[in-house]
Amino acid sequence: MEKTERIWLDGKLVPWEAAQVHVLTHTLHYGLGVFEGIRCYQCHDGRSAVFRLREHIDRLYGSAHVLELAMPYPRERLVEACLETVRANRLRECYLRPIVFMGDGEMGLAARPATRVAVAAWPWGAYLGDEGMKNGIRVKTSSFARFHPNTLLTKAKATGHYVNSILASREARTAGYDEALLLDVDGYVSEASGENVFVRGALHARRGLPGGRGVLHRHGGRGDADPRARRPAHRRRHAGADHAPPAGPLLRGRARARGALSLLARVPLARC
Image (cartoon, rainbow, N blue to C red; front, side, top):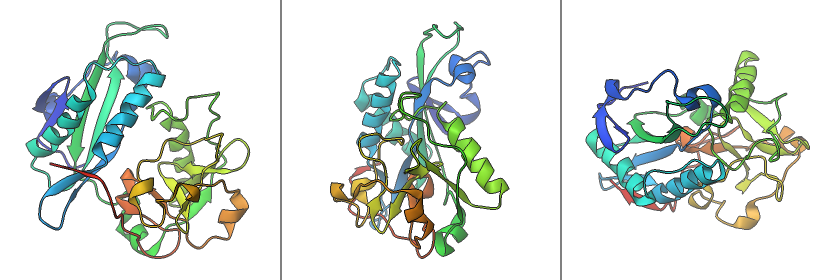
C-alpha cells in the first residue's frame, strides 16, 4: 500500500500515522461496520472525477441503516469529505475507502458505542494485476457459498461479510487460480469474491433472492445499462463461457476471464 498524507477521521483531516483506533474498538472484535470502495479517475481534460460518488454514499447510508448504525453526519458531509481527502492528498487518480464503524468504550453484542467515520484515499492499480487485465484471469468456482439473506443481510456492504470473500479468495489462490466465483445456496451464480460477474454485457445475479451486494457500476458500463440484462445463471453456463468479466471498484475497470479490457463509459462523476 502506498501511503498518502491525510485521512479524514471523525470530521477532520489528520496525518496518516495519526489515524488510529483503540484495540478495544467494537467493530474490530465483532465485525459490525460498513464501507464503500470508490474510484477517482483523471479525465481527458486533466481534471479528476469520482465515479458515482453520491450513489456510493447513498449505499453506505443504506448499509448503515439496515445494520442499525447511527450515522453522525449528513450524507452531503460525507460526499464533501471524500472530495476533501482526494484534494488534501493531491491525488489525480486513487481508490477511496469511506468506512463507518463502532468505537470503543463498551463491549458485548448488545453494546452500542458511538459511531465513528473515516475516509482514506491512496493510489491502487488493477486489483487483479495489469497482466490479468490484459490477458484474462483464471477463475475457480468456490466451495464456499455466498450466504443466504436470512443468514446475513446481503445487501449491506458490511465489514464482517468479507470473511466469506476472504475464505473463497484464499482457497482459489492456494489452488493456483486468480479469483473465486461464488454461488448462492441454490447453486446460482452470485458474484466473485469482490466483484460482480458479467457474461457478454449481462449482469448475472439471482433475481428475487439476491446473494450479492447492490451494483453501482451497472449503469456506467458499456452493454449493461439495460436493467433487463440482469438475470440469473447456473454455474454450467459459466463453465463454457469465454467472456465472463468480473467488475467492481477494486478492479479499476473489468478483467475478463478471456479477452481484452472493456472500459467504463457514460459515468456520472463528481469533480474533485
